[in-house]
Structure formats: C-alpha cells, structure tokens
Length: 239
Image (cartoon, rainbow, N blue to C red; front, side):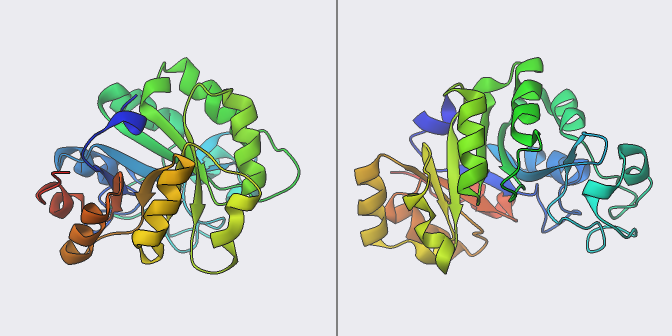
C-alpha cells in the first residue's frame, strides 16, 4: 500500500490542482493527475438524500453560484450549481468511476457531530464497491469521526488525524491513525522525532512554497499536500 510504503514524499493535490482550477471539481482532479501528482486530497459530506458529495464547506455559497447547506439539499439540487468554469459538484462515485485506481485518494471526512449519520460507513462501502482499498487513506479533524472510520474500515485502509495550530494540535490524545496530517507550520525536528516514535507517516498541508517544501523534505515528511502539484513534483525528493 503506497500510502504506507512510499520511500520518497508523495505529492498530493490539495482539492486537486486547486491553484489553477476550481477546487474539488473533476477539472481540478484531472489537472492534478496530468501534473503527475501521486494523488489528490478532497472533502466529503452527505447530502440530504444520503449521497457522498465532494465539497469542503458545509454551505455551497463560497465555491458555487448557489446558496444553502449541502445537508439540506438533494443531489439533484446540488447538481444545478456551477462550481466554477461550468464545473458541477462531483460525488465520490463520480470520482472513483472516472479516475479508478490511477491515483491515490486522501478522503477527508467532513463530519463533526457526535451522532452517527452514516457518512463513514457509506464512504467505506463505496471504496469496496470500486475495489480501491489499496488507493485510499481516510482523514479527518474529528477524533469522533476518526473512531467511526476505524470501526468501519477495520484496518482495511489507513487513517489519519488532521491537526492545525491551536487546540486541534492535541487531538491525538483522543484518537490517532496510521498517519498524522499537521499544518506545515507545526513541523520541526522535535515534531518529526515525536511522529517517528509513534510510528506515524507524516503528510503535511498546505505546501505551495518551494523553499518550505525543501525544508519539510529534509526533515523527512512522507507527503506534501499542495495546491500546486506541478511545482512540487519537480523538486528533488531524494531521501
């Protein structure tokens, strides 16, 4: 499984190649693949009718010409919005059916409720339907959601906890995974020693600056999540 065995840092397109195309759209994902990214990172939420929707925000307002909450709309309603350059908001099934096993997928679960709405189980069922267990890593900022993911996947796919500066930096006290996904600003020699001791693979976000990427590669990170995968793939990533 490349997520856990890659020797040189993986280059993962953040919401695709989102510096150049509308984020979390098929155009952005296709461009990341064309730019030779190893994989893509994207966000998944549930629609009102239980469809797995690829979008970062709870509302469609920022990234489309529509208004309202994903959780309060059906897939048919969501399909009506323009996500930029004529793109439509894709589903996870759309992505898997189109891209197949040609990429690695970092699926970020956007679920912060205590109540289990079935998102994590639905994601894993779709991974199984497309036989993509070896291509997927599931991450989330929520330790509650991470535990639900781990129950659903039963170690069949790797998982990761996302962290940023502030209180979420301590979320590993409540749950952890096979990888750790910190903001790049959190990473230094002390952090890498801590992560190595815990056996984490370290995939960091969001890295677009070449000098910062070189610093992180030198420190030994395992993955760079970037809006500009074309820039990152051309760096020397030798261990």
